[in-house]
Structure formats: C-alpha cells, structure tokens
Length: 314
Image (cartoon, rainbow, N blue to C red):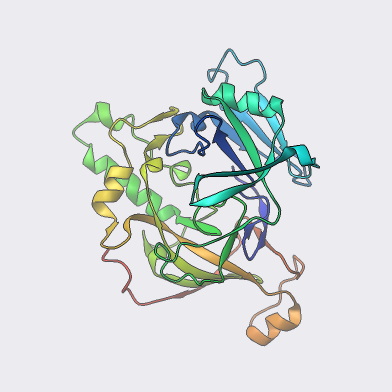
C-alpha cells in the first residue's frame, strides 16, 4: 500500500502493523511465510483522516464465491472488556495482547484465507524490544510498536530491487518458460520506506539518515526468509522459491544469512530550537510542524552518513 505521507514516532509509523491474524486452532499467526493466500488481500486508506484501513480482494477472480469483497478495520474503534485478548503464541516470542475483532471481520478473513482465523488489534501500550542478535547496532532501550516484525523502520533501495531482478533474468535466460513466471518487485520485499539511490546495495553502508526533523540510526540488515518467494501477482509461492534462492546465493552474510534491505530506528527532533542546536547550518522546515511525532512525505530528500565497508562481504 502506497501513501503520500506518514506520521512517525520513535517506535515506528503511526498505525503500522496494528493488526495480526491468528489461526483459531493453533493460536499461531498467519503470515506471508506460512500462507500464500495473504497475497489475495490488498490494503487501502480512503479516509483523509486515516481512520479506516480497507482490506479488499485483489480482483474478481479471487475467492469468487465471497459476496462481500472488502472489509473495514477502524483505527479508532472503542473496544469493550469482552474484546480483551491475551494469548501465548509464537509471534517473535512475544505474548499477544490486544482486542479481538468482530465476528463479521473474523469470518471474512477466514473465508479469504481458507482457515478459521481471527484478527487481533494491538493494545495501545504494547511495545516490544528488539533482537540484539539479529540487529548488531540495536540498543536495549530500542522498542517497536504493535506487531511490527523486527524493527521500527524497514528500508529497501529500488536500485537493489532492479539489480535482483536482473540477476533473476540472467539466471534463467536460457529457460524462457521459467523466467516468464518470475516476479521481483516492491511487494516482494514490503519495505516501510522505498528509496532510489545510487548503486545497488549501497544502503548496506548507510549509518545515519535525516529527513527534515526525523533522524534515523542503523540497526542492522534485514534477514530474509521464504516470504520473499511469494508471487503477489499470481497469488502463489514461486515453485523455485525465487527470488529467495537467489538472495541466498548472492546476498548471504556469513553471520546474518540472506540479507536484503536495512532496519532503522527513528528519533524525532521536537522543536525548532533543538533542530537549530543540532543543525545550525541547515534550513528549518517550513512545510510541516515540529512535535513529538514527525511527518515523512513522498519524494522527501534525505541527508546521509555512511560508514566504512566493513559490515558485508559484498
């Protein structure tokens, strides 16, 4: 889902990953990694105040027997005590805490996913720590919101996506029937922010970034799993597990395994006075306000610091 602007806190985007889908029998989350039917769903925000998340089927061919083609999740819904839910399950080794959605919503997702499921909205006070083994530059004080997977912000570089697409084309250039079913695009990697910057994989060396009054600090690489073998256009898992297998071949870090993209931790500069003390030679922003949260807009430019190439072997 592409948006023109986002509100950001030190723990992640406001509204990001507020819901999680749980298998009613196993009590485990239903994710891209274990259900290719997730690709049948597309997300959209129509309300100008961003109060509603619309979940709809990709097209008329998806689950044709389902008459209701979309369902709405509300960010501002008031829940009752009966909606409270706390369950123990294997989601990043964290306990689930939140509110169970209505029967109508749970039945819709069950029909789309082909398994009995229910949807949990994260409690507002739910915060999770970061995995220090996976994120070498993380601190014990770093946390993420709601059901955000590994870190607050995930960045991919369009130049790297194009390079991966080219590797796939080279790999299967003598097998046109195989190549025509291969897909590498933005949905494959599902970043929070997408940039288009210089040469492929240069993002590995990013250390600090700034977009207006939001600072970003490197946490570590994004370790990839078989989720990247999902073909979102054809709603299936690739039969040769691409591009995951090519990432394993070409982008395998000796410690962190297959990596593609990076994770960042945001911090907000709350006032113009604080900004001036930190960046006395830079212009103070005029198109958005200072505060405890920041605003990132589509096509914003960014300032960057890089480190020496000691982190990856590529």
